[in-house]
Amino acid sequence: MASIGKNRLEAFSDGVIAIIITIMVLELKVPHGDSIETLVPLVPAFLSYVLSFVYVGIYWNNHHHMLHTATRVTGGVLWANLHFLFWLSLFPFVTGWMGENHFGALPSALYGCVLLAAAIAYVILQNAIIRAQGEDSTLKAAIGGDWKGKVSPVMYAAGIVASFFVPWMAQALYVAVALIWLVPDRRIERSLTNMDE
Image 1 (cartoon, rainbow, N blue to C red):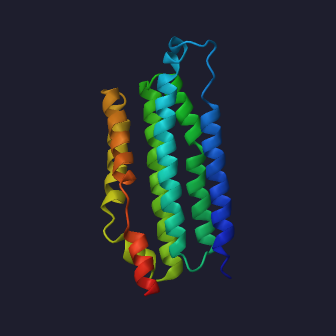
Image 2 (tube, rainbow, N blue to C red):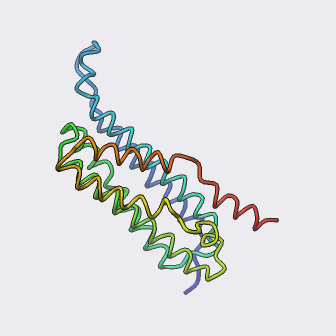
């Protein structure tokens, strides 16, 4: 099968991610009133939006760097990318549900399930790109042991379970994973620089 240009894949993905962020912010309802008190009920929805915005931003950033390593885009990569975008597209729903219900047990657990599914889908996409490039894959060399990728699903799973017993712990775990990924990861950039030298 002939390879497909990655520019179209990246442009499509960027467009979908931009729409996801737009839908999430539209879920924040404008309060009726001009006092600080009218904003108080919106705090849970706003906090869940901030967390999801950070997650989508992290995924967009890492997706951008990952695609830079791709030398060819196969049908498998396209389908893996669509699978990844499917889980990201559920962020507005679970974000809104969790915020509207003040981080209740079931909404928080479902939020964790979507985070877990998106993380797994990202790994599937990563592996599809590596397979398309072969054993000398720049991406494979860059990710190495990928401790973040291994720890994150475990923390998401722990958060899902904690949602039903210690709800604040679930949110703490989701925030902790976001903070782990928020710290700049230069592995791919270094690999691309080494490849150019």
